Image 1 (tube, rainbow, N blue to C red):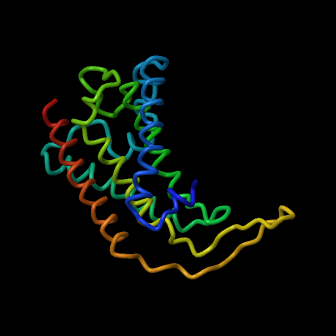
Image 2 (cartoon, rainbow, N blue to C red):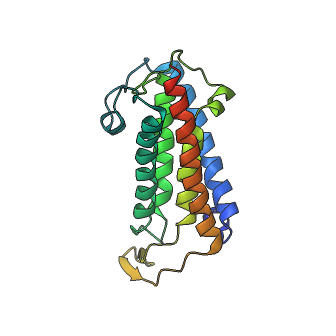
Length: 201
C-alpha cells in the first residue's frame, strides 16, 4: 500500500495519500484536545512561543515576516529530515508534517496559541478561514516533493540483520520543483492571513 500511494511516482498521488492521513489525524486530535484537555495547556511552553513571541508586531508587514520566517524554517526542516535514512528508504520527512499537524491540532483544540483566539474554537469548518490548515498543507507538499532525496537507506535481510545501502540521489523532477514552489507560496499566503487576523485582535 505504501509503495502504491505514499511512494507513487506521481506527486499528486503521494500528496493526496499523505494529506488524507494528516486530515484524519488532525480531526481526531482536534476533537480529543477540545473535549478532554484544558484550555491553554501548552500556551508559552513550546519552541514556537519562544521564537514567535506572544506580542503582535507594530505593523502587519513585520508580523507577516515573523510568521513566514518561522514556517519557512519548518519547510527547510522537512527537506533536511528527508535526507536522513530510515528502514527501506521510508522518508522521515513524512513524519515531520504529521508531527506538526498533531501539535497544531492540540493548539487549536486547547487554544494554546501564543496569541490566543478571542473565542475557543470547537471543531468546525471555520478553521479553513485560518492560515494554519494551509501551512500544514505546505509542510505535506514539501515532504512529498522531496521524499526521495535520501542517499542512504537502512535495509534488513531475511535474517533480520541491518545494513546501510548507498544509492545516487535522483534529480528533482519538474513536478517536485512545482510542489516545492507551491509549498512556499502557501506559506507566504497563509502567513499574510494569520498576520491580518492578529492585527485585527
